[in-house]
Image (cartoon, rainbow, N blue to C red):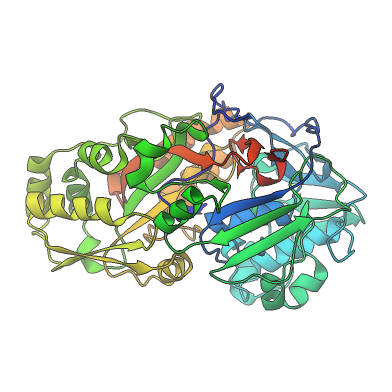
Length: 539
């Protein structure tokens, strides 16, 4: 998931159920072996309007929304086959069963009794058509990458084929998924929102549906998406599962600037912010109604390989070595970051400390490598980031260090809101180094690797292309268990860290704040803030 704000709000791999305080639990082992199991239904408490901070989403349809603001709305509008419990473990949600004898052909049976908000049944067809639509090359859907393991994806991408040959309907509530190669973690990744179902009426007119979504989740949209203003969701009374729509209404208030949002929170106009301005960290962490946990949000500076000044890996390595991360963390983020020494979260199975040779601060070696590469040939380096999220100070600090240690002049380009910035990223239009963040979409180590560095990866914005990396990912996917997959994934990580298409910066603490109007603040290690499960205080 691509992250818009200073803090990613995804898996800490800690069980987090909060009642006016924040607490953490045991690390998730991330193995995800076996079929996801059923989870207990939470207790019900209903009422009130929850006023939520948001930045502008890019999409409100699951096949396209792959950014954080989009997914935080989509997860209330839609439900999927699998969900994640308070320990980050997958469990069956709309799926009655997910089974395979060889990890290559999977049979999925959908529970009966669920409908879309327009009355259409949520059945096998609802998933098949959504996945086919996402994979269709003519649609340019952002989550097409997540269908890449399914047989027929190449034909869909190259010829615009309407259907993936690897999806077969067995009966109204059952379908089979044939993968190009075995993948033991399929059931674990099906909780990602890109695999959610979509109504037939929705795909008949995607643009209309994106403005007025037809979901199948515990909440439905009221009116239309008011761009750059707000999105209002109300409880879908026919949703079968209790405890997922405790507030009557979810009112997303959209801000272009996180400082303005925090001012609204202080004025009593917002009930929950999943992120806070960097300059307010010390103030927020002194409040009783705040959350702070070790996080899985990865911030990096990308070095687009389609620009000639970044072609030589020694230039990329030099840039990383010339950046002293800890002083930036201390000065800008009040110490609420951990310098990245790899690409995988410290909370995930497969993490290794200190595996990044070029993530240490060594300006002398940086100068030597740059000189060996023939010096900097790119003129003034443009440092790009999305606006309104507090990136100016730390990007300027990075630029100052590059100028001091490598003699590279720079200029900041931080003027686009996140949807526009993502569109620029996806179109390979960056003119210099760029900031992006990433957080896990599911509890498998591979989520930090293949989407960002695999050939054709959904968020491979540096345009990294390494067949050896792709092969190692395939070997990991085909392992008999996720535990046995880890060594292959680790070798793939080592290749990226040697080539340095991105400069790993840090892992962010999860920091959120809520108002006294919330009696029970609920945080999920994968799904992030669980707005529908929060309980409002009685008047």
